Length: 426
Image (cartoon, rainbow, N blue to C red; front, side):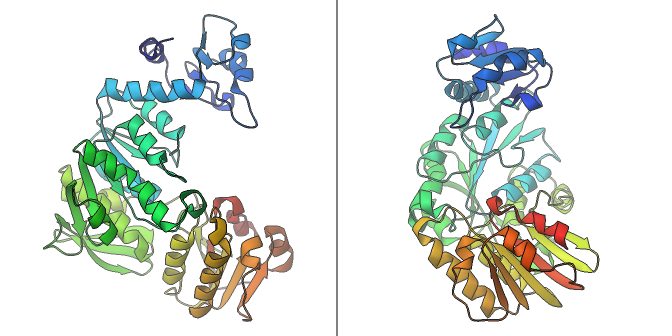
């Protein structure tokens, strides 16, 4: 079936689904396949649960005119989303980076939605499936789409840009994330900069943090709108005031008091301010958009439990974000406990990077450091301030959190560690 014809059918549907557990009446179901699943098996079930059409790529599962056979379901999903993006002609802002891209995306959405009808990536659906789903969630009412793009290897951002064809782009930073797939920090910079390459070639605008020398170097041939704390060198000047614990900053005479902890979140806020300024959102609306944003989903959440203050930042972790989180945590008052879980996808750098974080934690004024995971368990330390556990289960059995009172507790680790489980033990 031609993509144009598939798009006609898509416009008859309410939304797109790839999981029969979440099917809603009037959906178009895409029967994706993976290493351990075959969505074609559930095509008939999707129709029975209310799907208007199901898209399959195995002929034996074609049961009716509502079952549409294509050569490859994933490719059809991607091509349909690109066709839909061109059909809508919506303004697209793309966001990538090693750290902070989801928070930045949410902040930008909060700001721009004060003036425009926006659609943004839900959660972190930012890969070769998530980006198409985001594009297909946009309608003729969407004035600005904010698309988060994630990557763990070269050419991935280039591919996602070829689908979404962004009009604007922003890279939050270049950090030590997915080192295994990218082949080191130089590979990270090269891979993330694929967004710059796309925007420069298409003569589109790039939003740039003028305090980041790598961003400046990589965008010297781009159409740039910049922000930073130097008014003489930036299009928008944003001044950092404090982070005790929440970030406070100032622009155009207005003080913004966010609900985000850690000075590492300042750049995320500044980017949202600058993009709001670029799209001529009123200053007071920019302030409201940022101040009304409350982090969730295990990202820099403040949780008060009994007499303890918990900083839950367990959605993900890499050496760069772990470093920033620890430096910020040291500034917390009172008795401090850092509970850190393994950082994944570091390849041959895993041992070295976990040792660096262990040494950093030991050098800071943190009363107790708990390291969880196979990699952290191999870190060398002779300090009584650091306790190591090979797994979450051995931690659960060997460390009594129920007796801790009046403490600040940082919980941070990669998603696979699922350290949010610590909350139930306190």
